[in-house]
Length: 211
Image (cartoon, rainbow, N blue to C red; front, side):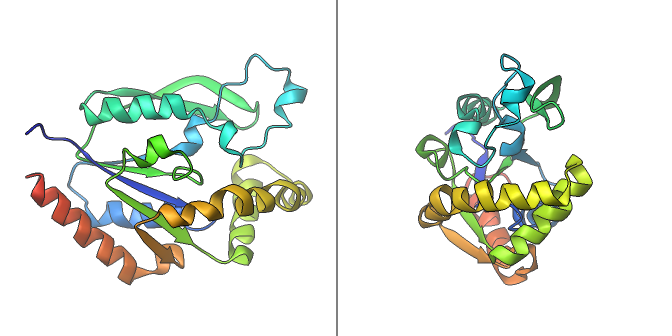
């Protein structure tokens, strides 16, 4: 039987704590072969559009993502091939010319708001998680992130949340919860759920003779 990496999907709304959960799992597997693949890196290239049109991009809609490329890259990683992960430039609202070389590992954690929305992605996952966090905490976290990391103003973040993020969450993200094998409340602070996940991952790795 050909050895194949384990793929774990970590979904949830913007600011839910997906990255915290992912990093907690990675920390527990320190010294093992594991990588994180973020859906945020796979926003579609928009260099063909005028800058004014790029500003209208709805980053919380399924059509914003280049899932075809993401799926292609996951399949390469499953064959233990190196990929060139794209980099997105949020200042220019399009894909950067830079890429990041990513070598295949035994555990792949796929993290993003809409990774459970596409059936093709779900079919590549061994375990599907949904990080479930109250809306008030999610907006606060997004506010801090977008101001600090993406140079946004408070007014623009709040306006985007009310007009785009919240309705997109209700329409596209929240419904994908039903596809999850495990729902994790409170994100990275839920140590019991993370312990359960780590145990499950270890079991799968042992079955695949990775440990």
